[in-house]
Image (cartoon, rainbow, N blue to C red):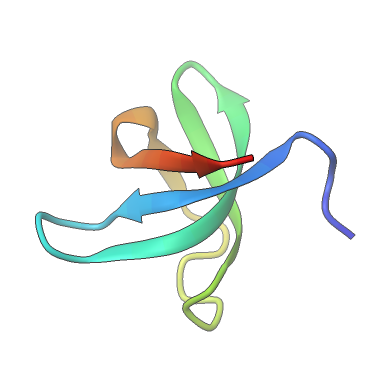
Length: 57
């Protein structure tokens, strides 16, 4: 079960590659990836707010 304050979004890895991930805000413009659709490849990674968009409510 995931916490209620998480959201699915698109994580931009570079100019061409993206991944669909579930994130939680950890403060100061940083998000922690807690789930992904890439087989767990990005779980636990902390990313900058500029690397995520297309939030799915």
